[in-house]
Image (tube, rainbow, N blue to C red; front, side, top):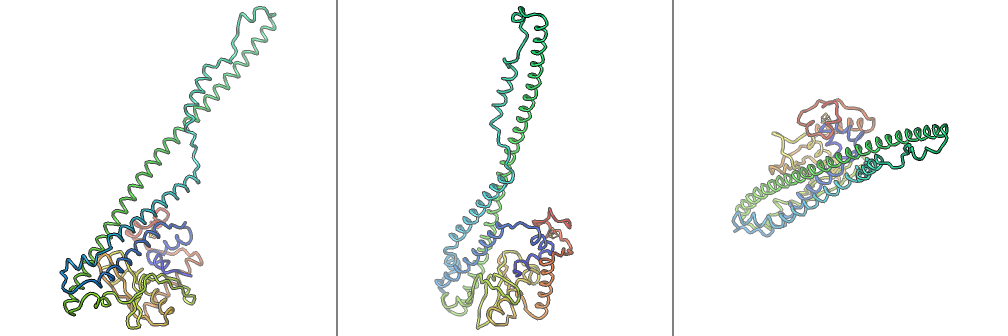
Length: 373
Ligand code: SF4
């Protein structure tokens, strides 16, 4: 069964989908972070909706903004605590995995012991030397033989010592290299921790900007609507927040497709698939991946609710803009063509031909692996 996220990967780059399905080890971290952020956006919409019921027509715009933003700060804080936790967990898992894979020689503490051993060997008192006093009373041939034997023993001992000293030195060198590697590893881990933290802070800043923009636009629209209709917030909230379902999972055996739809708005019996996107929109229309996602969601809704969907939307939250997607015959045909090619990549392992794009490749996690890059 093909998932809608698979279609999005294909639309980003068919070769990326090939890598994902044929080579990749799963990376859960990015998925969990983006899912947590998506959930936050949905929670913020819910808060706006709830808070709107307490907005009165005689309120000034500042007051409306303040009223609408109640609870948002806490929600953002709780979400980023979760993201930090995900990162922490992931870091620990990676560390454990690395330890298991490498099992480095951690015999560093032996250094001192080894040096002592070398010194001891250098002053070895077990080596036998010719002692003229002892040999004076022994017959000459015996003495000569004994001297020879002692010499031989001494030579063997010396060779053994030299070998042992060399071995100890080599061990010490290995230990020093391991120590240096460990220090380097620790520094890299620290750098990546700082990097990770900076990334999360940037993400948070971006998200707060996005929410502020949405809040200001919504407040202005609400103030205007209350003025024109002469009604309070609880009487007009349906205008801004129609009945909807969030994170709706649909699996359809006939289409061989599964998708988690960000939002389905329902108005007068009509269903509208809505994709929520944190990215900027293109100059015109929607991005190709968002187009295919919306068509796929429309088809899933048609099967699930036995209805006909003619239009869907993509909400580009960064600039608070909704762009329509027309679900006509051409859109449907184009979608099934894409689906056929995806099947070939997944089922038959076909390597797709792609045109590279500097911008895409730069952001692609497979750029090291990909020969096209
Ligand atoms: S590096 Fe470029 S061509 Fe290769 S898979 Fe990624 S996006 Fe596609």
